[in-house]
Image (cartoon, rainbow, N blue to C red):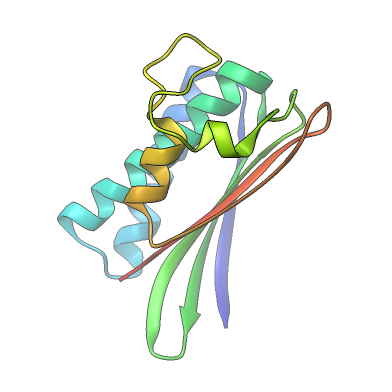
Length: 133
């Protein structure tokens, strides 16, 4: 069963900050505390920052989710940017096409319990992650 969702259009640093704050609030509302809240917020920060850096704008969708007796949060980050040429390369530590340390997407995968990525060159990227309480 899926519970409420929140959609945040990401196009500025201010909207990036709103997405992080909303993530913290939603994670706490499903009973996450301390470290778990910080992990989910860090993942959203990276995903939203990637939207700004590579696609200029996109959306973060936050959902409260349940699976049996488990509760958690699902985050979908999508954009209509240039897409990722090689997902396999992008998921390797220290691979970067933007002059960064190249730890973003692999780091998000390590922070979260579930990670899925879809991307087509010239069409955009959609990343779905989940963290369970």
